[in-house]
Image (cartoon, rainbow over all chains, first blue to last red):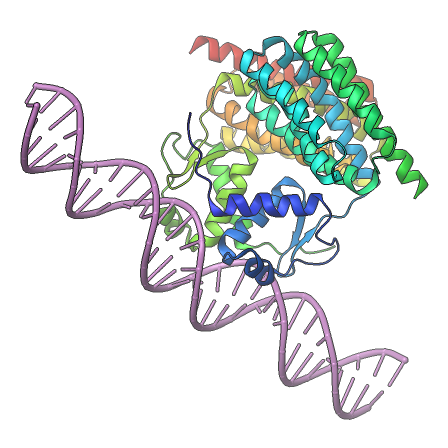
Length: 215
Length: 215
DNA sequence: TCGTGGAATATCGTATACCAAAGTTGCGGA
DNA sequence: TCCGCAACTTTGGTATACGATATTCCACGA
């Protein structure tokens, strides 16, 4: 086992990322850097590094001399995110299912169980577990870049899910879909997994569309 | 026209990025931050910001307290990059071709001409123009995230092209392929563009495979 | 001879202080 | 009312310092 030493700016990166996803940080308002730095108890160097990375991830925008802002949500970008996920994730998961070794299969099961445990608690926590489950279906393919991309897109998508989807009737349906996804994954049934995952992602997109249309 | 004010770290980001692409920076050797900062005439804050962004882009890796290294080239990652490009770029370009307005169409033509002009000069310059051409076929779709992703993947792919493909007989064939791509784009023939682009990307991948096999 | 321990050195990650330039705010005058 | 200017705020950047970790290299002992 290799212990991972994490640098301060990496931790700041993750903290701010989760704050953005949960909608804790306001959009359209520039981030006050010194205030944030003081609040997190770090200096501006790791903070700025984290902000730059978050911009690269697509969660922040910046304008020179005016600072960083949380990128606004818009229906068009949600469509983009889901179109990209549909283009990548099902195929990547299908591949991973076929080549996954025991550790990868265990990780998928565990991610599913953690998602299950979190169900019913606050939406943000569920969203994180949901993302981890989706990534767990792809990671065993051992394609680093693809996995990172899936994770990145999942993160971008999460904002929309957290912001727009009340966990009304969705929860039960999502649970069944996740169960089916895991079954197909464990059965190494790439074709079925691919179809199910496309349907699952498409269903979430449809929910989002409905909310956008309603609001 | 909005003039774009760019910060130092953005410029450093691009400078180092091009150096990585051209293979000017050694892989497997940690970057000496002080030396690099001194050479570029900047302090370490903008430099580190740029390095962090480049890591996020997948061009660098970092280990805490050991610094940043240029990510090594490997056949597996090239396969990944091209698989992702094939999953995204043809469809995105097809869409863009259909919705492109006059500015987007002009930009595509100009990108093609610039690529044409650069042909024959050094490989790195051609590679940049090549990337810009590919992006120009996607940008008119006005899907920001997709365009950024295509650009990012093109950048990652460029390293392999620069490193492994001597512009032997490739140049002439690539020129014809680009010409055909532009024609299909201007004709708004999405289906044809999609097929041609998939073939074009696939051809480059095939060339790379051959080189990897040979070496 | 070879491996181990440890000191010396180099480099990284972070903090602090400071500054110039750009943006923002608010007040006063036309 | 609306414009322009001055004061303030914030950002982006530099210089510098310092602790912590890595690396190097040499001496010592098995």
